Figure (cartoon, rainbow, N blue to C red):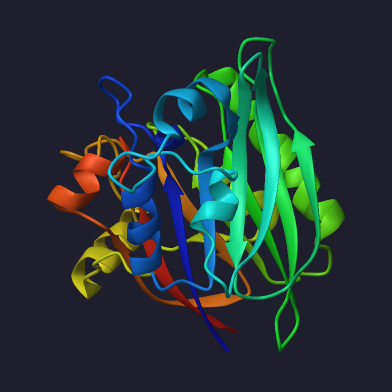
Length: 270
């Protein structure tokens, strides 16, 4: 069974400068993923100020949806789940999952490390034709110490909710620009990052590393900032899947929509 997945931090549906709405363009872009499962971060569940400012019809079009963004982005084929993390007077935002497979249940784990950054891990169980697949939508904090603690919470959550090696997909914005968390996730969960298996390797390089007692250098893709990606912030980790392909969506379109570039991967159940 093949599953096409994508992860995307959508920056709450507005541009980084002047908070220009990008919601309509994002809906079209997300449809271009042609993905069975879409992991979304910074999704606006409600924003009264943007709704009042951009929600009125202008030349027959609305620039802000009347519904929550996760419902607006979903096609007729998608089931949706939302994990509300940050709550404020005029609205809230969090993580969301869109899935062409039924979402049998979902639970949002609060992993906030302090009062000024509300973070969560949205866990959804998908009812695929082959077996249940556990999906975790992740958006970790800005501070390295907090990310370490949140990663341990993620490991604990996966081990308790997807035991016995059940298929797992973990995707989102890890804010882990120094790539200090991947080894911990590999050791704690038996996962691999989708670009691990696709990294260019040479027999000579592997032989030299073997003599030196070094492991192959594994690095996620560069996804931030979207205009000129340099930092490796966004990841897709999997267990129980073969990675057939993975790519970062580059180009002028993606540079305008969010400050992060999305990742799309083709997986096959092992």
